[in-house]
Image (cartoon, rainbow, N blue to C red):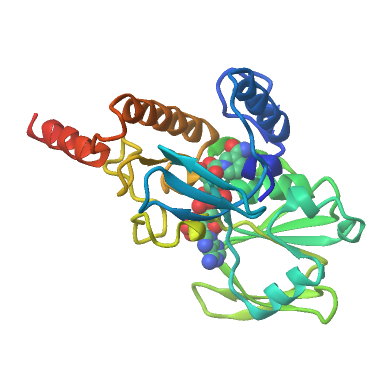
Length: 297
Ligand code: NAP
């Protein structure tokens, strides 16, 4: 991931309060960083590759070999794009053969111009990718496994209004064809089981994201779907007292920039309280008792 995360790959952010005209994801991330630095945040631009939460202070090791000791940690590592899981999808994505999981990063490349482009998915990312690719492509075909979209009404309406975009409903992509460059996708009807080929010059996979938790080495409890488990849905304390989680790495439901910022604020407040208590409070237990109180009320 590049610093700034998924919003660096988003064109216009339309649903963040305070921006009546929208704002680009890149601009928003630059502004967030500048604001944090104004309050004396030190930014170290390296990947954290390893953590040791069994020692106090906690120990983080980065890709550059830097070791950072910390009394509290907020995990806010976000999520990465998912793939369908087809051999030819992976091969052509790795070789630059016209398969990608990020239209905003790769869509403007010359080999996608005036082509028929397939977008897989039915959420906001798929609509956003379809609208973006409509600027360059001859035609954009959204391939969705159901006959209704998951996308928000505003994104759906925009996609429906764009004459270059059409939809293939109830279809799964079951193979990607082409030696060096994609030439077609094989579609399978989820209702009838019928298979056929659709000739395309590009494929963008927009089917959601997996949380970035690998570097935690299993030290923090995760939910069955891989997102970081928090003590309750309205607290950010994890299974390790003093370690908190915010944003898309723990949120498998809302997944919005504004909710990520909100949980970031919650985690900061909880971490601050943790430090004020001398780092000895059991924040997980606190959250549990808050839940018990609320349930008994
Ligand atoms: P999402 O909402 O989880 O949608 C994923 C889509 O991919 C769904 O339509 C899903 O189908 C489909 N899908 C999942 N796995 C699949 C598979 N293996 N094969 C085929 N299709 C598959 O993910 P998202 O679109 O990335 O959006 C994530 C969050 O970010 C959402 O809350 C969204 O509102 C937000 N977002 C907002 C904006 C914006 O406002 N500008 C832009 C992008 C994202 P089903 O519908 O059948 O489950």
